[in-house]
Image (tube, rainbow, N blue to C red; front, side, top):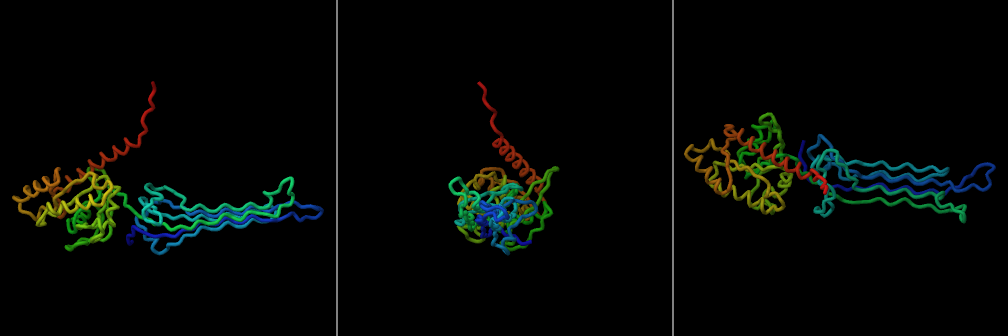
Length: 345
């Protein structure tokens, strides 16, 4: 299945049905009163996060979604049938944006989240509602409420525990392929990965989700290369795994390029916990491995793990470090969501 993480959608709720002007016409009833029924309500456009989806590709082939209109009221106090709702089913992690692509209407983080994007119009009152002591035979009814037209954008941000970062050919896809059942495309040229890949990784009896993001280059936050299209996918991650190509001629420069792009992207992405890994150490002479690790530690200001995805050197250490950071982040979120105990004097 192809991956699509941004889609433009046109939606329209249903208009309410008109009320009916009608009077009783029965044998032996000389002055039949009003009996016009109300119009039915228009259908609403609803968005719902469902299980089993991980792309917005369905919205490439259908962009227009119209709910049903309400049926007008009828005589004998019969109310018109309400229009059918229409439901847009999206993956969890989908943001709903207004037409300006900036205003967030809804954030569908969890499966089962449900939001009404365009409410259906109310049905109009029939003339029965307007009967009074001074007007026994009203000849007026309300029209139904008009529909709501709007254009929205759907933007998918993958929900993963770990986001893989690094320059093209840093070994991200290889790492994902050897630690999970995911089979991303692997080749010795830049931008092998053109779409994010998800993989379920296991270590010490626990599992977590890793997102392999297409490689970044200098200026990506301004749209160069693959641009910042995919940086949004790592916003929801608990920890970032930064892979640095050990076979590069300038490992410190490569490291700083990614860090600078995170800072330029803005938001809280640059403040997320990061685990830095010197990858492809199997291509380095042993006497250079420690030297490169120390250079990278000095640049990053923290510990660096030496690893080789192909030879699987240090892979378990990396997975355990990630698992530890994920547990810390989940504990933090749990503490933030807990309500403080009531204070009693």
